[in-house]
Length: 253
Image (cartoon, rainbow, N blue to C red):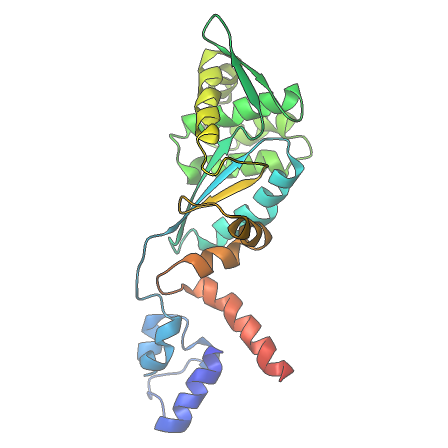
C-alpha cells in the first residue's frame, strides 16, 4: 500500500528528489528515507512520528496448561520479539491460573493445581524466576518461554535458567521453600483480584481491561491486537503486516 500511495503522489508532482536512489517500496520505511526521497508527506501515516502509551498486556496462566503454552509460544513470544524494539507493548506474567490455596496453621500455603502436583512445582519455579529477575519481563520471559516450549517444562527448568544470568541453585531453593510459597501466594492474590474474575486460562488483560472480545482477538492474533490497540502512529512492524494484506487485496481486485 505504501508503494501505491507514493506512486500516486509521483503522478501528481511528477518527480522525486534527485538524491533518492532507493526502490519505491522502501521509501516509507523510515523518516530519513522518506525525507531523502522527498515523499515525507505521502508517507506520514506509515511513519512512527507520534508516540503514545504502550499497550500493557498481562497474562494470567499456569505452567502445564496446553492453551497457555500454545499462546506463550505461538503468540506472546513472536509478538514480543517483533515489537520489543518499537516500545509499543509492555507485558507481565502471573503464574497461578486455576490453582487453589489453603493457609496452614504454620502460615504457609498448601496449593492444589489444575494439572496436578507437577504444575504446582512449575508455578513455584516460574514465580521464583520472575522474582529473581526483579520483575523485568525482558529478563524472565525468555526463560519462561524456554520452559513452556519444552516437551516437559519442569525438567527443562534447570537448563533454561542456566542459559540465563540467573542462579539455578537460588531459584531451586526458592521454589522448594517458604520464599516460593509466599511468592505464589502473591500471584494467587493478583489472580483472585481480577475484575471481572477469571474463568479460564490463559486469561489476557490489556490496559487493565478484559472482555471476551478482547480475549478472542488477542489470543487469535496478538500482533494485530496490539497494533490495532496502540493509539500512536503505528511502527513499521505493524505496517509491514498491513502492507502485505493491502497488497493481497489490491491483487485480488
